[in-house]
Amino acid sequence: MNTTTLPLSMKRFTTTVIGMIILALLMGLGATSCTSPLDTDANRKETPVTPAPKITPASYKVEFSTAYGSMVVKGLPTIKIDTTADPMRFWFDITMEASDTTGKAPLMHGFRLRLDSAAGDGMIIPLVQGQVQIRADFGQNWGNLQTYPSDARTNTASIVIAEHPRQAGKPRVVTITLYIFVNKDNYFSPARQEQVLGTFTLTL
Image (cartoon, rainbow, N blue to C red):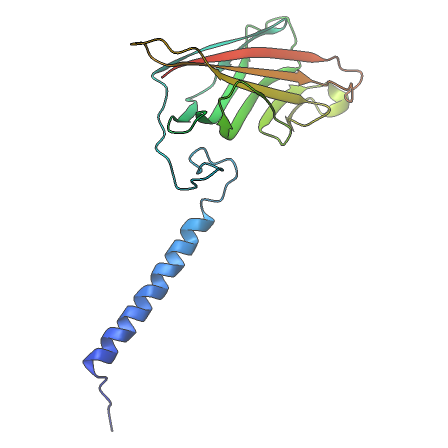
């Protein structure tokens, strides 16, 4: 039986090609696993598009209250800040739930805010593409407690991110104001409307 032995140079070439194919496949899988539009570690949407270093706030304070109780943070919030951008850019993944609601029957029992690369320029940002997932109970006609995405008409939400005037020798402070209006257009009749206004104060 005849056997053919490949030259050493051909073996090296074959090994290199196989290695490149495997590397390309691994890179493709990695890219596929990181395409979530609400990934809190996503790159900045504006140039430069390369990942920028992000920090977490040194501390934060939350103030959310309504006529039907208050809201408290559930679990550990994710807050990332790109301080190299001007204005700064913010990434959020925060879940909140209703508290102190005994005998008050709130419509909104909680929400989750997920937002990427939001500019801290003090301008109103409408959250009309489901960036806020609202847990609400509009009554038996609507299946009791359900999750509803924020939109432009019925369950609306908006956010303002503004940095306080800087003071020499002191940490930077940012206030995030979130406003949610549930059943704004009375779509879920006969359920009432409900509004929530709250702030996150971040110390960097």
